[in-house]
Every structure is written in C-alpha cells, then in structure tokens.
Length: 561
Image 1 (cartoon, helix red, strand yellow):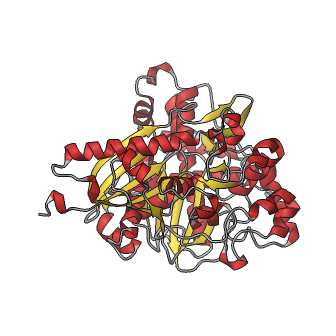
Image 2 (cartoon, helix red, strand yellow):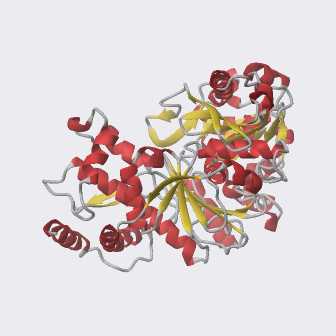
Image 3 (cartoon, helix red, strand yellow):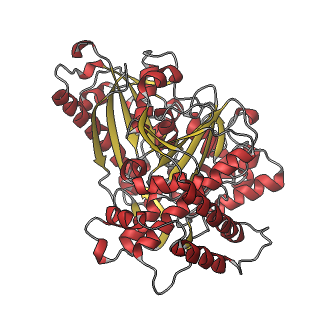
C-alpha cells in the first residue's frame, strides 16, 4: 500500500452551466478523494437573464474566479479530512473544463470588461453563455456567406454555423452593443480564460488557446491556416477582420501546458505555487476522456443538454455535426462532436412549469416511477425534443418542442415519458448520422447527471437505440477528464490514453434493450422521423395526415396486449 504522504494527486475543475465542481483524484488509479460543488451566485442559478429576450443567457466572469478559489480550497479541506496525511503539495497537476462557446470580452490586460465600473451591469460585457441564442441571425448570415462565397470554413462543423458559437456572438455584440465591442481589446473563451487567469497569463497575447474551443466553435483548422481569413470576416464586418489580429494564430490540445499556478492563486487555494495547469477544453470533451473514449466508443454526456462524442483516426466531413477537430478530445485523433441543445432541461421544464401537485414532493422520481409502469406506445403520445432548438443534425435554434397525441385522458406521467422518449429518439438520429458517414459505433458509454439519477430514462434510451448502454465508473466524468490532463501535463503519464487506462473504468450496471420495447420504438421512431423531417427540413415532401392515426393504432394495440 502506498503511504498517503507519497501519493500523487491531480485536480480537475469542471465548470458547468450552473456551478463549478472540483475533484481531487489519485493519479495511480483515478480514485476520487474529494469533491466540492460551488453554485454560481449571480443571476438565476448562475445565469443572467433578460425578461425581454428569452434567447439571452449571460454569466458573471467573477463567479468563475470565486468558484475556482472556493471549490479548490474546500476540496482540499475535504481531502485532509478524508485521507490522513493528505498534502495539497502532492497535487501535481490541474486540468480545467468549461461550457462553450462561452466567450468573454476583455481589455488589453485580459480583464473582463464586466470588472470595470462602466460595464459592471451591462449584460453585453458579461460572458456570453453557451446557450445564449441571441445571435441566430448572425449565425445564418455566416452560414450564407460561407456557402455562397465558396469558403471551406463550415466543412468541419457540420455545414451550418450556430448561434451558440463564437463568431456569431461577437458579431451580434458589435451590432447590438457597439460600445462594449469597441472597448474589448480581445475575446477569450471561458475554457481559456480560467487557466490563463490562475497562471498569471491573462493578457490576450499570452493566453494559450485550446483547439477544442477554437476548432469546434471558431472555425479554426490547420487546413486553412487557423481562423477564417480577414477577407471572409471583413465581408461580415470590417471590425471582425481587425479583431482577428488580436485573437490568436495557434490553438493546441489539452496535453499542453497553459502555465503554472501563480503565487497569488497558490495562496488563495492552498496549492503549491508552480503547479502545472493544462490547456482548457469543453466539459463534454473532457467528459469523453473521463469516460474512456476511444475509436468505436460513443460517449454520451447526458445532463441539462447532451453531447455525443467519439474519436477516429480519420473521418469525412459530416453534415450536422458540431465539429470534426484534430486533438479536441484525444491529442493525435479527430474529435467528433454532436449533441442535443436540451435533454435534462426538457424534463426540468415540464417539472417546473406543468407538473401537477400530486408529484410535487419529488417530481422527477415520482414521475419516473409512474412513467416506468407504462408500456412503449401505450400513451399514444409523440414529442419532438426541440424546446431549446436543434443542435444535431439540423443545427437550427428556431425550432421548438412539439407534443402530439394528447386526449382528455392524457396524464402527467405519460407526457413525462413522451419527453424522455423524444430525447432518446433525438439521440438515435445522431447515432444514425455517425454511421451514415462511416464512423463506427461499437459501444455506448453514458456519463453525466441523468445516468446517475434516472434509471428509467436510461432504460428508455437503451430500448429506443436498441443498444446496450454502459455507465462510466465515475459520476464526475468531466472533472475526471480534466484531472487526467492535469496528470499528463505533470508528466505522470506520457499521454492521455495511458492515463485513461489507469484512471477510468465502467460500472457493472448495463442497460440492455428489451426486445419487445425496441420493436414498438422502431415503429414510433418512423413517426418521429416524419415529424423531424417535416418540421426541420425544407426539402421534406411527405405529409403528416397519417401520423396521429398511426399513433392511435399503436396505442390501441399495445393496450390490448
């Protein structure tokens, strides 16, 4: 047995939508020693909203720094209590993941504009959270320019630019908050901001930019020399072309060093000055690493939204994917990202806004228990999971949720089940898109909040997709993935794959598809595809006349047994 005083640890920081989680793990085997969650204090559950604009979602960058200090300090205190002899000086490396694209306007010193008195209440000067959809018009404009101008920039991000991504948000800021744009020397992604700030490298020219954020959200790729050309950006706005010169030329994977923990942040957290800090990446990508992603393995990070991640040595350009980026997940491999703009948020919407009082005591548990007693098809309901738009494969924020098949007898558990089924159908459509373009999916590993909390939902996913679902051993896969890169930049392992082999694993739980359920879901999925294509594509030529009647026929057959 290794003595506590000689053990080595890595620290992962996982910045989610509403909170940041710190995780201290043993680098030898990934054993989780301590974890702490810090909810962002600003706004509503950490999000700054505008009642006049439901598309707006911003955050206060000060919450990120307060979160780093508190979450790390508290995790260290917990580790001292949990492990006699624990010494924070034995934390040899730090990794960081965040949401994205969540860009922050900063001054020449890398200080967020919202830290200036002039802008402290200006929503445009805050961090533009990943699910801010205010820039849908700019996203469409970027897509149109790339398509009509023959530019290659959308080839690696699914053929359509998103309102959730970097350039559309920056362009929208220019048009709607010109004073903020003019005052911003540069813009820094959340995933780059935190490692830069705690290592004393906040000045924009010193920030080590991660290829994960750059490649998936800012159209960065080596094939065209990095970021889009000044010519392309100037056609959108001359100011964007000028901004390009104040951004970056190089973006690197997370096995590279962002810097070393500064004296200030060492004192704030209790860690050792000079501790290596890895280049940051997005939460889902780190979650894939923490779940043991490799070629043939699809990792689904299932939380408020979902991200579907895999890696491949080679892949064609795939329409509708969020990105195909070298090194964005595992260095040396292509990182492939897809996902759904809402998953748990769909369930939470129903619980928060429409849940009957009978289930209010513990709504998700009670509704799941009641819904689990229903058979597939029994309710006669079918839903589209687009309450927050569609990320993959349609890449359209101007799509909305849909529920058909309601009668005067429709119950809350039936609706809840239909919403869970809708998110599972959306996941199956993503799996099909991967396989349509030759990316093999041999197994599925699920991580995130839903696999940990909702076995009913996981069984629905297994039945709908007609594939087994395994669960990551860690319930904190994103933070674990970040910690893995902390171990790599510390030199504990030569690469991420070697660290994964020692630090990740799977639980014994397997959700196997139930054949009779899968058969009914195959019928329902045909109807889902009809709704998906009818409402989501311009070229759909079919009619919807038979959909309700076929749902009723399936319902009646299932009820009769």
